[in-house]
Length: 433
Ligand code: 4AD
Ligand code: MG
Image (cartoon, rainbow, N blue to C red; front, side, top):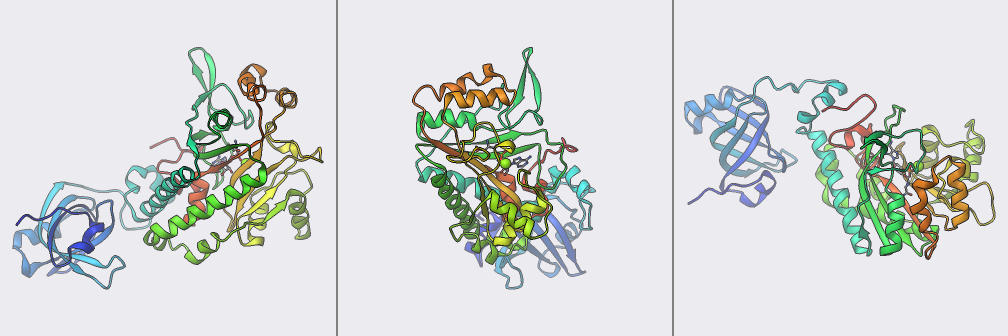
């Protein structure tokens, strides 16, 4: 009878059977008579037990001398194991070494964060990155599921562009056959063109900002999901935003219980964030609330991290701050119907100090106004001619938003720092590995 080769995650289906698993050795402990091998194969983590009395002397010696991160095939019988959270283990009958490993740098002792990220190509193999990035994967899959269910078309925006819609201060410039080009800060303007062709679209790709601010929320390369909807006003966009966030969190609760446990994330709290609606608070009221609570802020300023943290914690939920001052927002945002000084925008702030996870707005539809705003911002009319075309040929009300994937991952996983939320983070001080 042939021995099946399986993944650790499927061990539950093979209780009492002998199976073969390809795995890496994470850690090992033991005595003179037993060796406990902590294994991982990319699907899950579990323990294989080697009992000296049950196998040959030579095999026990081999097991005892295995080094951290050696790759191997282990063969043995699957048993239930009530003591581990995984619930199953293997009684080993054979081990074949596939690839040796010597002096693996990430030992079971504590290491500093800088060291771990210098070794990120190896650190990915460890428990916490595994759990965090599995949750990231669920959020990506759920994003496609949500927007496909809602009739959106995925529209890919270019990464090399001539424009700088989110401000000219944090651009990465590169040489494009003798002319300057920029790495894209946002796919939004292209999404707007897409919405006029497909009605409802979303872009999803890397975006780049040469942010000099070294905070635990900023990357220089991050992934953004940017839905854009034709014939839609801001209120309807806010409803889509909150339903989307609630859907994503529900999916993680459904699919990543074990990963949330590894990260010790409070599932009850996450569950409470799936309850809708999220509060909507005007920027004006937010300023008043902050002032009443001792913050030294004036109408017109942008919020910093302490202000964002206070506001979302105050409501114990993600909260929309709506209608920001025009002076601190991008040129394309729609003018308010009755006020000169604010625009029809909303930022979604996450509780527990995770900050702004979504920025969005209704878009102004008027050709002359946008032309004037582009000029006021010192942007080149030549670069935005195509964008202005969208207001010349059947302009319609439309709205959209951008969700920063790594901000969301940080929030959902409860990680301290955004660098944990992406496989290979790019920050001011990190370009490698
Ligand atoms: O608020 P932002 O700048 O909005 C836009 O780019 C719009 N064009 C979106 C749209 O309406 N289509 O960025 C959107 C989100 C932020 O809320 C935040 O989650 C994330 O992108 N973000 C960053 N994430 C990590 N590192 C950075 N440096 C980020 N800058 C923005
Ligand atoms: Mg923003």
